[in-house]
Image 1 (tube, helix red, strand yellow):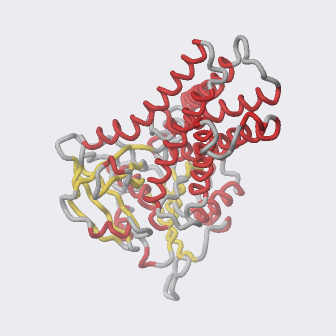
Image 2: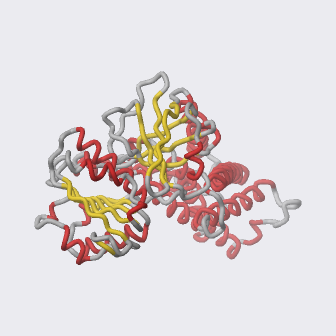
Image 3: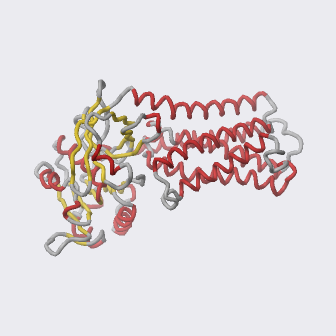
Length: 442
């Protein structure tokens, strides 16, 4: 995708988002306002409607519409989703707080036994929204398993949205005219249809296009490659470096999916490989997956692809551990295409035994213009290669003279990625040429 088209698409979708959030504020304030309104009251209502619209749009952001995510990358969309959720909560909390300070009698009794039902649904919605954000931001600190968190996240999000909608309907403020009621009815239907699409239509489509496990390959570094083949369909068209959500040993309706990068070349889209390291409860079960097990895929997603830069004079890959998986997909694809552009691959691991794809990386150098550098943080005395961590001195040593023209791809744990980016920026590598994955889901 050309840079100009990306910018246009980006501005278009940002405009759509802002329009969806601001439209209720504009329309609901047209014409005569209900009696009893004033600056603080109207400000509270503005915060409430804006927060509600943002809350509903969270479902749109996580629906994984490929056309929407294309200019951003779905990892950026998910970060956008996280911080907008916090902003939406702040708006909704301010809606409550301003009334609590400025017009406390409007809140009525706090006890659900005495308060109107629609006031209780609003308060419960606010509480659920707060719990949703806390469990998302501090999942690891709270030691909540990823699968458990996903189920809780979805249940709380849907319940909070439906309760908030019932609160708005019950209060009825600013919804007196037919035009305003039609607007909010349309919003309600849009949010409900999004939930139906995400939770029912998309899983149904995945169910109709199954895959099956045909091989489990043991790799170095406590990793396994799961090989799947399409069943009665043509497979998936993807780019090297992209990823998919994988549902294994379960139905796609059960919300037990995990994102993994493709490690295979897209040349054979009927046979797909994912290389997965044993890091969590789910990943530790990969090696025990029986041959013939049903698999469901939702993808492809992601913009972490060399194919997006056909005019690049060369590429630099920087990975740690299983972060080498999407890079391996790129290398295999470039070998299939007989791509002879210069490539530099800095592969960071603890020791020689932990290097995933170690043997194939040595062999693939015969098919590519590839300079492979292994950087070991805990090498034994016999190791004669690079040691330690990424540094400016190391980059100055391994990069070519025209390194500012290359495209850089970084994949691995966040501390390594941050350190590599910092050193590259210190060498004045343009921000637009440094690409990295942001996912941290285990």
